[in-house]
Image 1 (tube, rainbow, N blue to C red):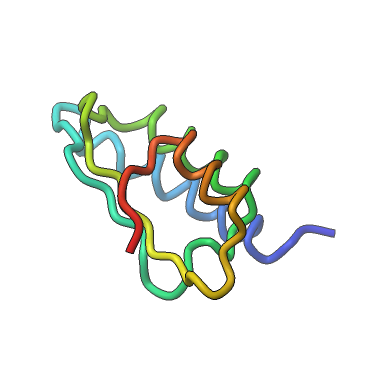
Image 2 (tube, rainbow, N blue to C red):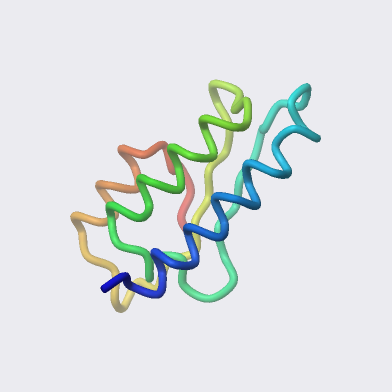
Length: 91
């Protein structure tokens, strides 16, 4: 049984692959995850999405990677995981 977030990521993966070709010569300097609580995704799902984005887009070395969190619900290990995935700004 797939979690709804996994089903969403399956569809999002197809969209990323489809759109990435239009941006192949562009560099990503900022990425912001927001719109609700992106940390609804578990650590594995976050890693999956980050890997997919890094595979299909060219991120500059010092890109700002920002994510919206709910400080009332975020676990410390998730914050560590976000940092390990390259996120360098929380809001």
